[in-house]
Length: 184
Picture: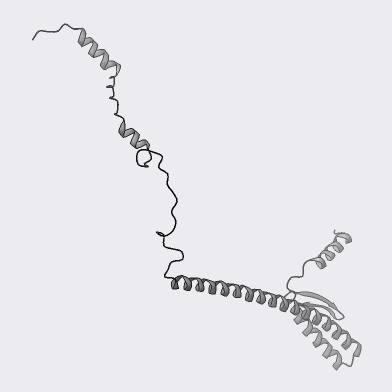
């Protein structure tokens, strides 16, 4: 069994949630004739229909009551429409600014390309005419840098000693050396 505290807490939480898009949001309206459920436009239409029915029944109090309920949702809807229009106008303004910036950058790029084309494709002086940095020759070899490959080519490689065979081969050779040599 649920306590009344948890029920009221849940009811309060429902009213505090973010509203989101009010135009498409579904509302529960507790009017004089019971609950009316739907989007603001649907609720407005329903209360206007109930107001017409009450007017045909010559019930001025009920007619006024239904019209007030309809007006409340009409105000909600118009406020949401104003906010949406303001948001849309802001987005359009930002889009126009971005487009103007892109157009300005494109025009600057075209102008720069035209200037480069008019100057013969050269944006600076002829490289032969530009001042060259001074080079100081510090070696006697004509400015060449000594590399490890050059060092290796200069030195003769030491001859390698032949590898010793495995122990078995060595022992077999030693035994062969110990035998007396047969005269030929």
